[in-house]
Amino acid sequence: MVTSIRSGVLTLLHTACGAGILAMPYAFKPFGLVPGVVMIVICGVCAMQSLFIQARVARYVAPGKASFSALTRLINPSLSIVFDLAIAVKCFGVGVSYMIVVGDLMPQIMSTWTGNAWLLSRNVQISLIMLFFVAPLSFLKKLNSLRYASMVAISSVAYLCVLVLVHYVAPSNEILKLKGRVSYFFPRQSHDLNMLNTLPIFVFAYTCHHNMFSIINEQKSVRFEHVMKIPLISISLALALYIAIGCAGYLTFGDNIIGNIIMLYPQSVSSTVGRIAIVLLVMLAFPLQCHPARASIHQILQYFTEENATTSTTSVAGPTGLAGPDESSPLILNNSLDINEVIEEEPIYQPKDTPLRGKSFIIITCGILVASYCVAISVSSLAHVLAIVGATGSTSISFILPGLFGYKLIGTEHKADMPLPTRLFKYSGLALFILGLLIMVTCLTAALKLN
Image (cartoon, rainbow, N blue to C red; front, side, top):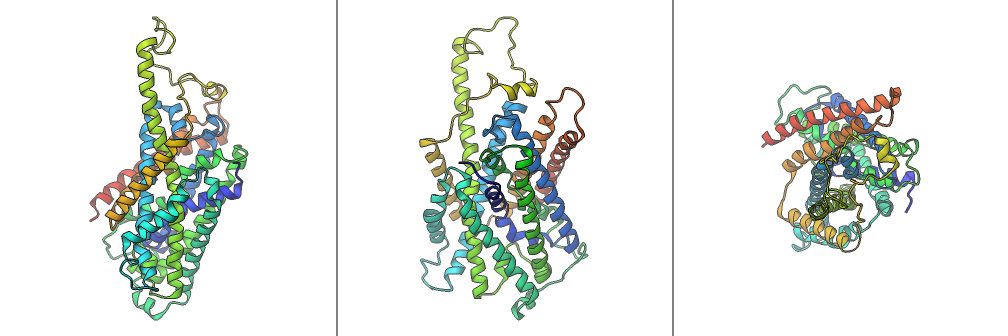
């Protein structure tokens, strides 16, 4: 099914605006207001550039076949399984965090209508949401099929934005009692948190890159001028939302802000509707994490299947599967082939693309759902785990992998000097790759030291 730019924008924006939007005001705490806004803008620009790079490098594989795995094979086939594993783990962890948010908010929502202990049970609410809402949506095969769910989720984000702004403009007495000190620049007093602890929140907030290739594959045109409109619009909208919610939330509560801002608002009709909106948001965002996780797990399984098939074939007929090698045939395939050869014809060493359908689709999807459910009902708080996931998975998917693809692939079709725009894209990829590594090492170290 061919999808439109609007559908792609909704899907990408929905993927970005997940649970991270609740923690955006909290990320301001060690930075202060102005530096916090600067960090939102910088991370947004970096995220947009990495999405532009993904749009540029999609042309180096067959139309409709762009993926992290396929592009990794062009650079170093042996690394494809590592990157697919990173994507699967990251998306799985984020999906679990969504269900934990459901488990935290649904009992509060239900408490306004009933005192029944069974309905107020965290595990019961997670079970019901998973069974009747998340599971059916997760079995949809195309991201375009989620466009209506994305519209509902984006409406939920808009309501949260209005709720935060209204409570900032006209705070109640209960909210005024909760307000702490507001720092417009770097706070002078010490916090339990430092900048490295909340920096991954800014990166995590824009992480939608794992769905970018799927969106490109479903577009009617893969020309860069067409596809680039999707990240340009979606990241610009996310940037505006994050600045509005981050600034208003931090100005409302100051340094008394917590990780989930909506938990601070007193019980009222508006806050209850806001909690319902957040539940809708994360509930509908789960399939957007399931989709790339399922594809990556499929690629991992396919990798091992091909390895076994290759081993059995070469043991009988040699490396080519036709005849044994002579003295002039290479023992290791040359991975430095001209990229034009890769574009123009399918190389014999490229793994066979086995579609994900039938039993494989059902088994992998059920495995993700069951595993997510088991972890969600077993863990009551993933704050520390999410800090680690944000510092590793989000950084690798947002900066490191797109940056590596851009630096290694962009410009390889030019025999002579590259045009200036191409050169800028290529070396911006290198800059993102280096930046991603620095963020990963420093923020992961800080997250591991955080008690």
